[in-house]
Image 1 (cartoon, rainbow, N blue to C red):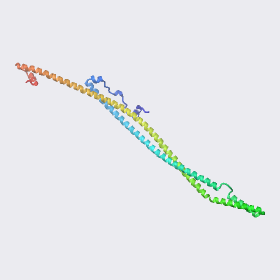
Image 2: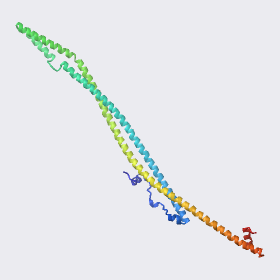
Image 3: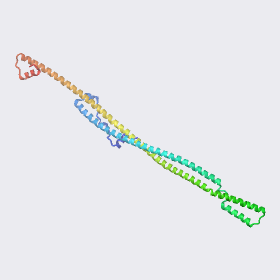
Length: 307
């Protein structure tokens, strides 16, 4: 499982140093001077902008990693589809191979049955029968036999001739056997070709399966990195949001101080006007009593509207 530090090092992103963050206590906010608060607002604003930039970079890296994850998943899916398609072809060739092997087995069984029917492997050969007939005929021609012995000899010769005729007839019929053997061997050969395709396609299907597993594994690894990058993004964004919130609080406090100062200035102006009015009334009273007024006194009376 990948760690945040490993992700930071691998993708060369700036680590967030909490020591660079700007703190704002309630005491700072309530009791800090206006100058101090203005300075603190600037610090908060600058750190907020730094953290927002950091969060943006981390979000971009995260999005890139998520895109790579989707690419690897798509690659794995493509290998899965190829594997499944090849496995379908494997099954088709298996079925055809099994069908042809069954057909070949039936043909070879027919060959064996035909051989048994023809009995080509049993009894004497044609040449042996011919030699035996020639020997018996020679004996018939050269030996003096009584009637019974000659009759038996003639019967043997006839019997041998019948066997020879049957043998020759069976030998002439072996073309059917040869055709059947050839057909069986052709079917078996075709079955072997399908078996070869089964082996080739199964190897390719296994290769796609292995590549699919590897692509899914890589997708999982990249997804883990993306998750860690997202955690780093959240870390920076939350810190940026906190700095923005504190910046807003300081700005609000500064507006309050501005309002308080304005109220104080307004009160001071009102108090000053009241004092000027009282002083002008005193001067005006002196004027009514016949005292001579200097220029400054006259200006004060004009300012207050008494002259």
